[in-house]
Image 1 (cartoon, rainbow, N blue to C red):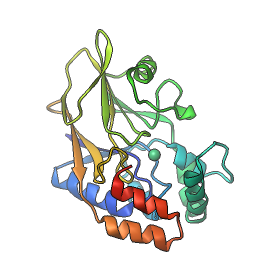
Image 2: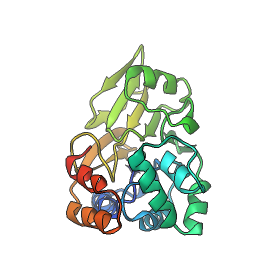
Image 3: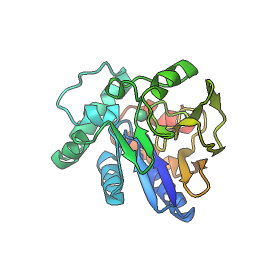
Length: 240
Ligand code: ZN
């Protein structure tokens, strides 16, 4: 069985369509979504619909939460805040109700999914280093957990200690725990503009990081045409 692990789509329809096409070409039959379906880019409702059609497990991201409430409660930065206001106006009541209903963590077969961290999933902390990962591992009851939120493909392993390991092809070993960031489909921030996602090969116990080119120009044009901040279009090309 092959799972496509999708995170931080952020209303980038072109990136999402390219990733879904790649995942299907790679014989993925199962999907999970780690949250932040909306926010930043120009097609929130279309991305919600595509994810709903997958009928897959989805957890809530901070942008999903903020987009589905009346006014922001969190100190978003200016750019994110401007985009979230636009996103609220461009989602239907049904879209918002669906986003509001998402859970913070879920177990899918024998692995866990979460948007930010397992120790305090509703506080939207970022896992960038070993210390952040240690806190999350304490609450991880499955050998494998996928997370998102930082928009950086990263992986941590816990055996005698906790350390970062390279992404690419991770072969899972029995007795160890893995906390793996799938990267971002719709707004990568690791200086690579291509959409990022992971494939979990359950039979071989391998997690494969993939990058997919998509129609960046169309995504950028839509952002500018929507009246969203220009910087949101610019950053997509820079992968940051
Ligand atoms: Zn995000």
